[in-house]
Amino acid sequence: MAMADDDPRNSAPATDVTTHPGAGTRTAAARPDTTPAVPPEPGGTAPVARRWVLRTVAVGLVLAALNLRPAISGLGPLLEEVRDGLHMNGTVAGLLTSVPPLCFALFGGLAPRLARRRGPATVVLAGMVAVTLGLVLRPFAGGTATFLAATALALAGIAVSNVLMPVVVKHWFPDRVGTMTGLYSMALAMGTSAAAAVAVPLTGALGGSWRLGLGAWAVLGVLAVIPWAVISRDSSARAPEPEAAQEAVPEETAEGEARTEARDKSAGQARGAAPLRIVKSPTAWWLGVFFGLQASAAYITMGWLPQIFRDAGVSASAAGVMLAVTMGMGIPLSFVLPKVAARMRHQGPLVLALGVCGLVAYTGLWFAPASGAWVWAVVLGVSNCAFPLALTMIGMRSRSSAGVVKLSAFAQSTGYLLSIPGPLLVGALHDASGGWHVPILLMAGLMVAQMASGLLAGRDRVIEDGR
Image (cartoon, rainbow, N blue to C red):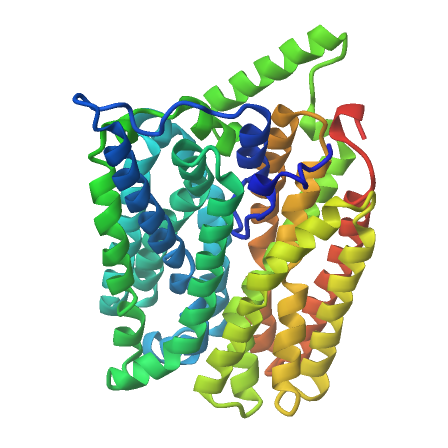
């Protein structure tokens, strides 16, 4: 499927692990929505009301995006203090870094059904409340189980909000999908990098308590709750979003799967072709594997990179800033890579280039983790930009809108499940070996597998051909 690359509305790609840019941009390009986002009010006040609501939604979108990663990236620089405070071993600490993809796979699937019943704004509001409560409760954890439960609560809120961000954009900004997607993608990347950079200095400013340092991010959550509480009271926000919500993750519910299958069957009969069977497509599976391996690399980086630097003699604050640099590389590159990839028939060269950057970074972490730390942080940040590349490839591997939506749901749900063991194994291997060489070997092996699966997923094929 060719990307709508020349359409300015679709020029800005999404950068979050559960966004579905294909669904949003395709809808805007193929079926422009001329219906006002806010129904006309009596007395001819519709334009004023619409401007007021749209401005509030834009503010809420940015604040929500800023809250979608600090619970994860703000933990990595303080992981040593958390481990000591809660008496965790490396395997349990690895479980902490595996919880995000697990929660994304489990709770993200609830978002479409909830949005169909309550409307997307109400569900995003609930998500921001869950994030805030999780961050508030986490500092009071007296043990590992309580800490994990509070973290899971925050991640559940992040998961449902992740999925519904494209739905929010489609509902209120149907003619500015690319611009608004780019806006919340930038805010998400900024929240990720800022939390990593500020975690240690903020903890120091609050008396050196990791509990206060982690809990302080709840303030940002409170700020995000306010606009969404206002938006959810608007009549258009309370209306259910059956179509948009279903398109976000169609296969996560039986109803969504049935509707998508019915559309595919109807379209297939009209063309005299068999209905689309996503699980029988090798390309779909390779995309799922590629998505999972790049997600695993990203969560290993967020969870363990600061500790690798700290164990090499780098200060805690510097290690946090280095993680911020790594995550911050996604801000500019996430806009460039998808446009380049969309012009290529085979995305394999980009997959290889990003993979080589990852292998260079791992080699540096093996031989000179401290002396070349800034270089490895930058190079690893380039390698982590496989995420927007994976999303772009998903959009190019189907001829139809329904096919891309179905492929996106399949690849991401499969990928997040595959990404769960990676961070956990890194912690277990570090404990067993007493150092970072064995875990780095595992990371390098996963990167080689990522390159191989990406080469196969990047071939010029479409799932409708059964390939």
